[in-house]
Amino acid sequence: MVVDVSLLLQTPRAALTRVARALRPGAPSPLLGATVCVTGASSGIGEATAKAAARRGALVLLVARRSEELERVAGEIRAEGGHAAPYVVDLTDGDAVDALVADLLSEYGAVDYLVNNAGRSIRRSLELSGDRFHDFERMMAINFFGPVRLTMGLLPTMREQRFGHIVNIVTWGNQIKAPKFAAYIAAKSALDVFGRILGREAFFDNVTCTNVRVALVATDMIGPTEAYRDRKAETPEHCAERIVRALEDRPVTVNGAVGSFFEVLNLAAPRLSDFIAAEMSRRMPDSAAARGEVS
Ligand SMILES: NC(=O)c1ccc[n+]([C@@H]2O[C@H](COP(=O)([O-])OP(=O)(O)OC[C@H]3O[C@@H](n4cnc5c(N)ncnc54)[C@H](OP(=O)(O)O)[C@@H]3O)[C@@H](O)[C@H]2O)c1
Picture 1: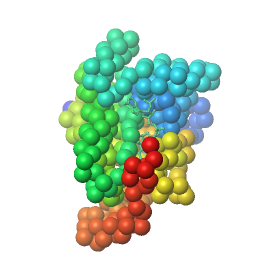
Picture 2: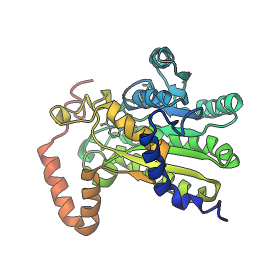
Picture 3: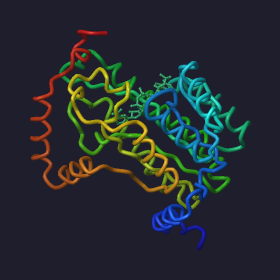
Picture 4: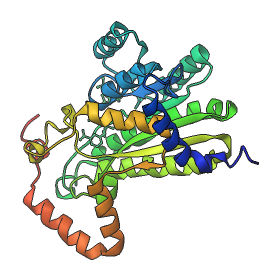
């Protein structure tokens, strides 16, 4: 039973270990020699996360659809002395995800860490979504069903080896509940809840999950959204450092100040938070892409 409840000490232990590592430059990260699967590793946050994990000595398993980009990222990691293997998979194809799980388990026995990062967003008001039910289906396919299927495939061996950690890259929108993002945020919220419940069910098998509620990051994803053009955004590399820290420390959630503020406001004064969100939404109309005016 002592072993079973040891996760309760995970947070203070992680903080102490981090201090100890800072005092001993060059001390190994828990990722050294571990297998870390990063989805959406062909660009943006996933690429930066894979590179940061590889620098800590992990063998990174890179998943995405664009093979040339995956080869480029794997090549750059190897050029720095790291270890990486690319896997070209469309995560919205259930059979392809099952085949990926089979490949990973036969090659490595188990995956120690999984970063469910691959995703897409859509910013479009409900008013413009009446004849676009496929927006909701597409968002669930890549942001929920894909990562859930991959996680479910890798989970049994994590439980058997009594270690595993899953990081879900979700969004501060889960806390803010930002207008015009209903399809995207609903899918990311579903993944957030799935991860939280997984962490509870697998608690005594030492398998944990962190939901990283990412704010605005300067990647290809935010390009089509005119409203974000002049907004301050984090670099993918900075965001990746926080994700790798979540892999090492295994907290339950990683939140930013703005997201946390809105989460509290949503609880304490829900109608006031509706008013603020509605007013902000009115000032930031649908983009030309959302209106279908550009491809
Ligand atoms: N940027 C932000 O401001 C922001 C904010 C909050 C949360 N996020 C989340 O951060 C994650 C990474 O996004 P990013 O900003 O780094 O954008 P990005 O550069 O566009 O990266 C998205 C990644 O997902 C992969 N992907 C998309 N569809 C896929 C599919 N069907 N199968 C396999 N891989 C697929 C893409 O690879 P391929 O195209 O090669 O398949 C790409 O590597 C996403 O989950 C996003 O929702 C981003």
